[in-house]
Image 1: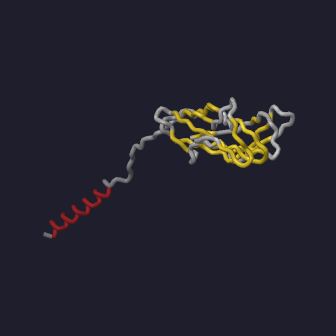
Image 2 (image 1 turned 45 degrees about the horizontal axis):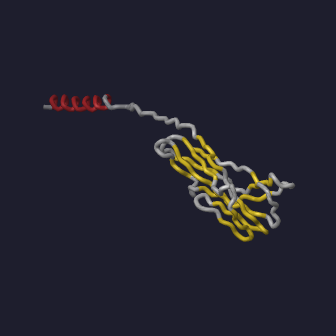
Image 3 (image 1 turned 90 degrees about the vertical axis):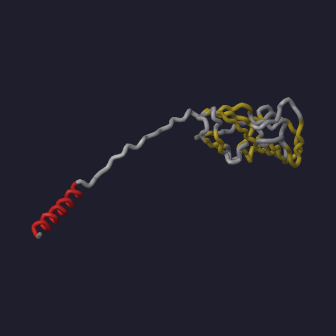
Amino acid sequence: MKKILSIFVATLVMAGFTNQVLAQTSDTKANPVRAEVLSAIVLTAVNPLEFGGFTTTGIGTVVMPSTSSRSSTLLVTLVTTTVTPTPASYTVAGTGLATYSIVIPTASFDVTNTTGSNAEKMAVTAMECSYPSKHSTFASNGTDAFTVGGTLTTLATQAPGVYTGTFDVTVAY
């Protein structure tokens, strides 16, 4: 019986070593890789920011919102002319359903009298975008559009003339 017990114990010990020898010491899994190349983002200016015609007898503003009609404050009177007041409008193209951001000026900039005898200026401030969060998502076909407005401030003695200037708008993924 002692011999049978010794053989049994030896068999169990060997079986234990065999299990340890057969234990898995490494594993490999394949993991997929994915990359997405987006279409180049393209911004097109469709209409300029037009404050339209007005008269002024002192300090005031012409407000051209991004989503509604213009208005005036203080000593500015709006006048209908051949220039139709409009917010600046843009179309943008890119990858369908991708989100993009819009950067508009946060600092004031000037427009300059290009037809008068001196280079008098007016400040444009309070720029706003038709997307208040300044983010949007392309339609599934990769297109979108937005508008930008602002506020024009007149001086106490603003000379008559046509005032022009530029501002930058940037879009990015």
